[in-house]
Length: 74
Image 1 (spheres, rainbow, N blue to C red):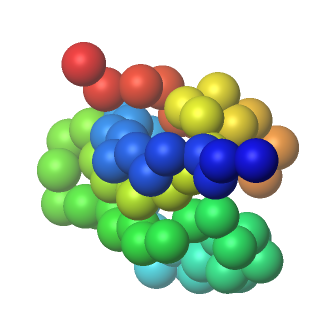
Image 2: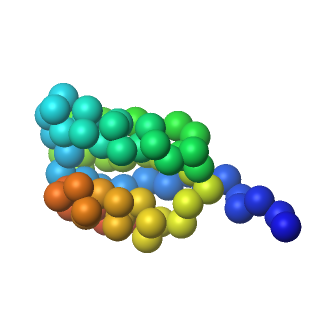
């Protein structure tokens, strides 16, 4: 079985405070297929960049379940 490819995904979110980032970090830290991530809270789109083996929809679902808006940034 081949491992899933590693992707760099970019999303628009509404994650804007340190408390929000802490909540996301707590969840992302439990997911081994998330290799690296960061959120630019200074950007108007609150851009989440993530290196992962997960598909885009999984990231959107995870953040939605945490109460955050998330959509693929084009």
